[in-house]
Length: 330
Image 1 (spheres, one colour):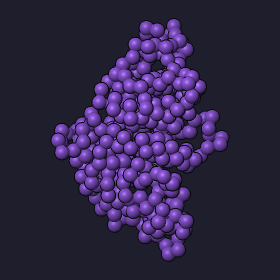
Image 2 (tube, rainbow, N blue to C red):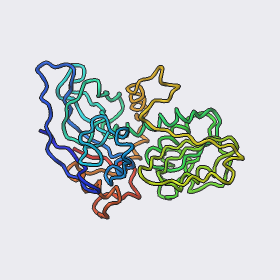
Image 3 (cartoon, one colour):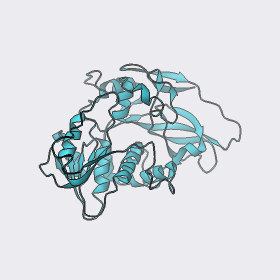
Image 4 (cartoon, rainbow, N blue to C red):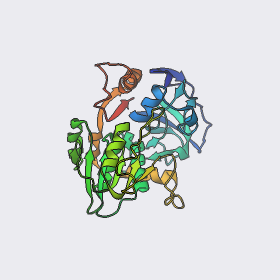
């Protein structure tokens, strides 16, 4: 038996016992993993926790090893780091990442885990799913040398997108968030921070705030023929799109980005596992530790999730306003 976190109702969750398949002696095609850390993907998991997943998206929103069905009860999550205790000899004892929910031990096909590269500590590897999303967003955005880029919304994904884009030669990247407390994080990553911008000359604007008002901000930053990449997902929330003003005269483009599918330009040569390996390799930079804003014990996960989703105000738990990646320790 193992212990897993389940969403049991709107704003409610608990840790329940769950069975783990025993495997067969000498079985080489599965691994048993003992979890060391998991990470909360705050935006998406908050929508799941507060029952804001539209019924039309029940299938597309499934995580790889989800149990149960939306809206609840459901075991959901996809940022799990652990050590292989049983499995093929080349994986036994290795630290691995898996797109698995919050659970202290589990068995999956050996192909579902990816060993951490040298130089990546287990504690930072919980950012892998966020980094994978950022990589995919930039593949969709296709930034080029010298572009003027704005990133609106400095959650974990927004910070990673801005950090990756800033390493393209000649780019001018502005990291924008209405929360001035994001400045320290942005500057730790070497980014130019602003709470707003009057420049409307950007070639590329990436919106990752998760708030409808951020889309209006993003459009206001665009120069002629600029493109907006929408990385926010709003669940059931309505989003007014301000398509008046200069939207038509400047011939602006809004394009969605979603990590569930590879960019068509990469698809002939890249598999999802290749993209995840790249994400893990990019996380070896120790500066990225600044994106982990706190941690809780696994047994406190129901309280932490309720606080992070804004469902309750628990002074002993992390707040939704100030949290980036919240790490769960097993």
